Length: 129
Image 1 (cartoon, rainbow, N blue to C red):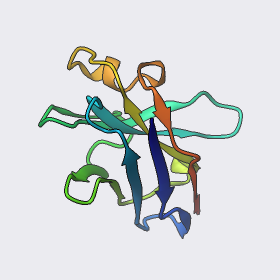
Image 2: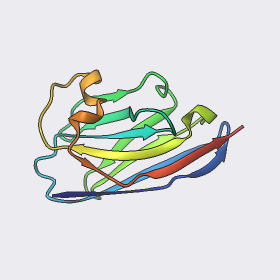
Image 3: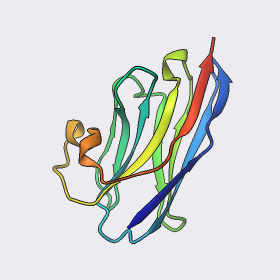
Image 4: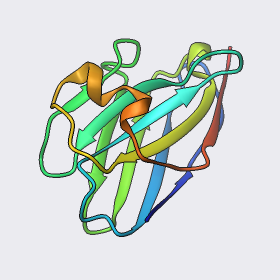
């Protein structure tokens, strides 16, 4: 079993920055890739960014490319999401997730929520204009 705990959410103005963290614990040896997702009220959960645990590729949703950066610190078992130039459209609950089964190293697969096994509880990000 794997546990994921997000932190770092908050309220910022347009153009501001936030850094989300996800502490990962438990049996992580069979985790192939990890990612960030978000869900706004009334909308489906969408993939934001994904990174392989064994040096695999990094993928971003088109809406955040160039503004968000995903990274991981293996020594600390922590996943990060640096979010810059935030916009009101980025307002959502942000979740980190981990995939137990290998999937093809392709962007649209790695950003699909159904490919992930374990989920955190989420951290709220609110961007006001």
